[in-house]
Image (cartoon, rainbow, N blue to C red):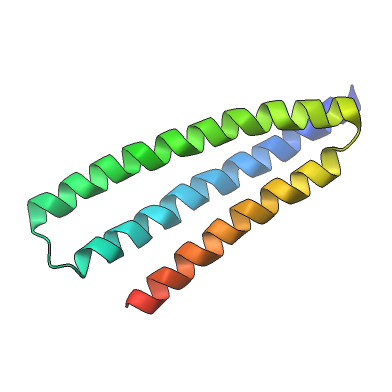
Length: 104
């Protein structure tokens, strides 16, 4: 039982990182399109559709993580699975942040 509680705590951390990924990726997306000289209406549409699509991807990722962690608890590999997921999330954060810095 305690392992499942730990699994859901780690899932909460992964969910928070996924939200952060979506926010940082949105900022990167807006910076990328703002250097193209797109108009105000185009940028607004890109922002809204971008948030929608990134949100769907984030939501699917969070749902998958719950299953992945639950199975990790059952198979006793939760730590390895959490490390993999966290590495992917941190890599997305780093890439999006670096791209945003380069564009400035």
